[in-house]
Figure 1 (cartoon, rainbow, N blue to C red):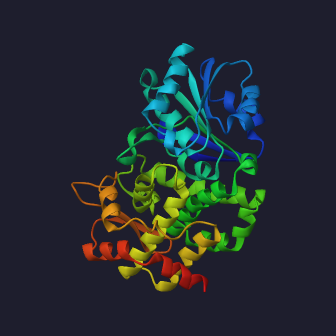
Figure 2 (figure 1 turned 120 degrees about the vertical axis):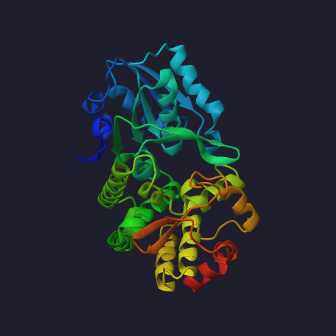
Figure 3 (figure 1 turned 90 degrees about the horizontal axis):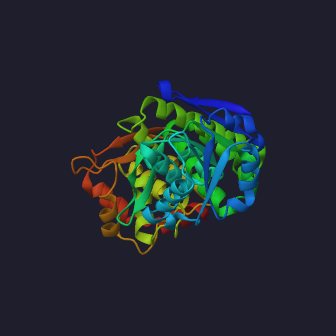
Length: 367
């Protein structure tokens, strides 16, 4: 087992990474203050891992809340089911909420913990690659609104993050690829040498090689822990973690939550960010294409939806958490491994980016 730390003073917490951690009761017990525990999971994950977790929680008074699966259910109605479970079982302020599942479960359980009786403890137990390398770390919690993704929520840090890499063995290939989009992101924004490692090891990652997966998770979590420790509430450098997300969230909102997986939309959005960085003269064509090649190698879409034009993108991008004083800030790349958040770009460059022929670009890279 490897242990990393998110350094936030009194609210610092560990990230445990290893195989078989769900079956190690002491790891969880060390971060549970009271006797009550509420496990929030979904109907897909529960049959796979809930019983193992419950065995590790023997001796605690445990309530299980099993939610419907999918991004389409990341809303107020589903959030209320968590509160229903907590209140029906009379959970008090010393309860601990445990999120067992992917990013949707982690975001909703964390938001519920932030709100219930004005804040109770919670622990993240992510079971998808995307949640293990991204959403479980850093304390972003929330739900979607029909007009914008993740627009209702709170910064609320967990007491611990427990990453059992064995849970990836049951992850569908499409979900694994979606998680790789966030792994690739770290190389693009702050760790150019990591891109070379990913290029050399992408096949091993997609074949669920435990050594390769563990290394990629550790390196990704270490990068995110550094950024969160420096900028917890996204007032500066943390916003660079949203490379591809402004474009990607527009895709998710327009297409309908869950039609595109989050990582798939981020991948297509990252291609758009690479293209815009190229059009600004910050990246060479070879650097842009290197990023696109890596996303293709991960089995990810690199062409935005063909039924989305500039008008649809701009409508949704205007409802983004990085918009300040009416200015649309974007995460772009000065170089591979160096991201910036900026509103200082010519509007015609953004328009050209939104109108680019990404299908032709992708075909040129595979011919």
